[in-house]
Image (cartoon, rainbow, N blue to C red; front, side, top):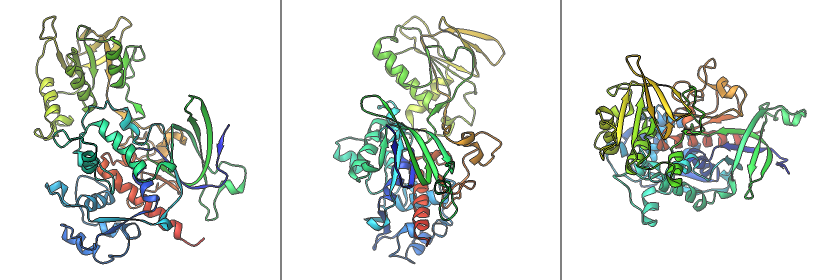
Length: 470
């Protein structure tokens, strides 16, 4: 059986994480207006907002509204939407959103959201007790404050931050509460996005000359079987995030059964008793927050840890040297451990060994890891399990050239930090392919509070295009 929609869908969103959810909300008729009595603390923005008080934000000039705003994002529309939702949050204020929301059926654009997991995307793959880097309030989506949701669930924040488990459940609940479930095609994997590759003229292009997209893949059903699908769409939005493909060392032995690239492997090993406090150390490779989370998780269960990373501890590029110490005490604890010359021994003090400026060379079948230190000397360590946590990358293999031809520098591979997909900053439409949009980490918006601006830009662009005469 193959699922086929005969008529082209106006929009297909690939990815059901926070950015995909937010865009689905905006395309489902939920329309933001400025509250009649709202006063924004930013005087210039406040003046602009009073100029068209009865026009929705989606129908206004986003470039004009966002001009002059500054903040922690390079995207002007991300700063705008964040300023409207959280007016003075960066200054420690607690002003309410200046937006009110109306559900207007005439603003609806039919769409489907395709995702491998439940709504919330990669948040369902993170160990539930891990806390967010961002403050809990910044993880919320429009018109359902996270603190209110937490209060109703009788849950609390940890030092103003939320657990990954709470965030995943919030996103899943958000989709249900806002009536978006009918748009979500979960358990689906996209394998190809072809542009105007059909034999018929109808499929090759639309009346305005822009191409139609053919989105193909398969859906895993409740009984575990896989059903193929094929969908035609006038517009496609890439919202896949960057957690699909874990970074690899590309060394000999990396594919051995005891070498893993996700923290969940350690959780499973503990459940089965394959790793215990009496086992050989767990080797954690990496110096980012994922590696730090793994260290904290392992030490919480009294597992011995060897922590290896290539950079020196005082490298200003390390994330630990950029975080406020008081706001992130657990990460500062890991950073302090990384600086100390800890010793693994057979005594009760066995626990943690830091290996800065060490490069892994190979993993052997007898569970020994070989490193080269800063002096060029080789070192051998016996381990029980290896976690290689050196970042992750998006998997856009369903696009031609893996999406690299859509990037700022088409001659280089796609990299969310150094070579993101190039889009118009006020519509998020690809500068290289009409009808193709990208939001979230794919375009450099890495925090939930800022990915929502991309959703606003896309929804505004699609709504305006939808109103143009044929």
